Length: 387
Image (tube, rainbow, N blue to C red):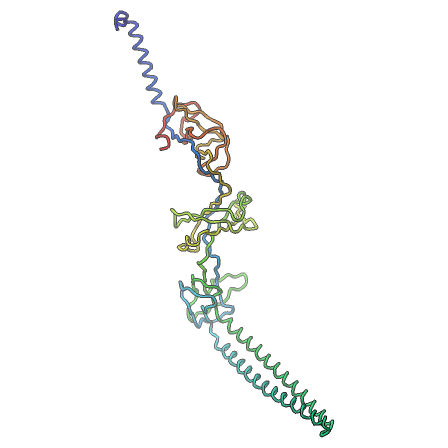
């Protein structure tokens, strides 16, 4: 202090130097760029592919039914929302004329059977008479002419019996035809399920769809006991997918829930919606059937298929990687960042595996698109590391 008092010029110089240092520190603090910093850690990285357009929850079995012939609805045995069993009657067209034909055919069958039974009994009696005549002929009691007559009568009555049985079989076939025609007026459930929609009321006329002319089905039945996901995958990603691969299913209706699934089928062709949008349909089934009991066919769904997984590997957020596979590495000693090349493995939208360039515990910049961020600049973290 005495020295500074004795030499005022030296005191002035020290004051100026301190002021300059303070100004530079203050300037650096004010010019440091605020960035988001994150510590490199270890964890799981997955290589996944996802659908290009919204997928759909589908029922394993769904049938849009129409009667085999047109006619007026005489009986509507179900309503929308009903649960039905396989082969249960759903709808019946006016069929009084066909019912009458069935009854007529049944009567004819009954009559021909009775007639055949009568003729066959006569044939049995003729056979017994022949046997008695043959015994008498052996005992020299009757003539050979009587034997010939008895044998001829047996053959003719036997032939008549066979003809009568054939006529009875023809009658049965006619009955089958009449019953088949009658059944064409009845619409039955091909499987157990729920009635989704009915297009038609009592007294209305319904008709099957002509070839090439789609018409609304009379009854739409859905089996909701089995559901799957149908989703379009870009043709570029499709070759990496194989049946049995694990998948994650998400639905807009259940935003906070994920369903575990597996790839069941890969379409054998590329679907061309537009010339620049070619996709392959992928089917995925739910691994846990109890999880999708609340789901309904028609829900929109997204499918994320896991192609490859790496566990306990060095990873960084994908957003931190620049073109050319580089990251900004943060130096805590002087608060600067440095552009550092890295080598990467598999990646997804969230994380990228790092095989060389940085190690666990290093700190990198996340906000790489922040204005002013460049190699060697001074930065300050926006928040605490790992916060």
